[in-house]
Length: 193
Image (cartoon, rainbow, N blue to C red; front, side, top):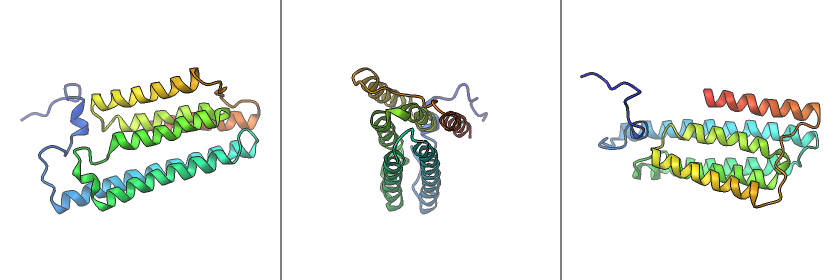
């Protein structure tokens, strides 16, 4: 048999790699748990990297230290909750054992909260949404991706149009411009890796 070309594969085929009809043997469950653990470690490292960049903004006076602290605590807490669910085997009850949509909603809520609560660095939080959505859509069905896109669109619409928050791209100082550039290029790099 020949394999279907990538251009002909259905959108949901990526999300259902081993979901339907896969016997959940101990080996399969261990592989799934290991893959989820690796993904969550990378997510935690990404949050910590961003905490570093937000801390430079705080050092330069662009935002307060509450921004990297609250962002870091929120991101690591969400990651740890999903890690505990994964390690307990909870995730294996679902066809999407990564709980992709649920993780997305949590991560995007953190980003939307950052845009609203720290609008002086709101552009950076908007950039980070690309990482969250970019990686997750690799595992989502078209319906799930549409739901996530709608969630982000409504959230951004509320923050941009229904509040008086001045969403900013920090560029007042050389340090601001460097950190903003670092956010842009590292987001691009993380989306490409």
